Image (cartoon, rainbow, N blue to C red; front, side, top):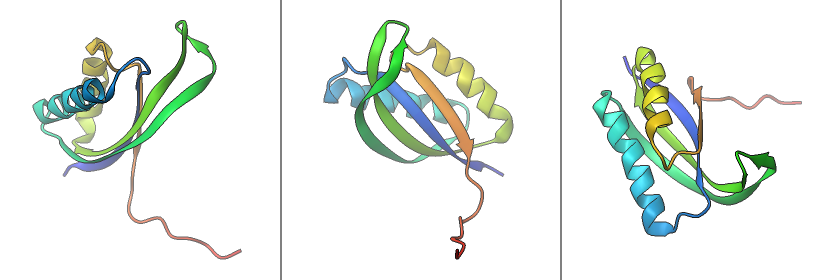
Length: 103
């Protein structure tokens, strides 16, 4: 059974809208090669880093929800390291609905 993941992707801030669309499409293609499926993507916009990382001062943040077999997540990480337009990526497994608790 495929697990639902939330991925925070950071793309270089030098990308324009068309290049960002191509970079998100490239992530979708990599997911599909591994048998996964993209559920949704939300652009959070350009953000500055707290401190420079690899001589970069900021990036474009995008949250992507996707489904993928649990054993394939490491393969996805390896593939994304080869992608030139993905600066950083972090994944979190999303389990069931989150319920609010009363204080």
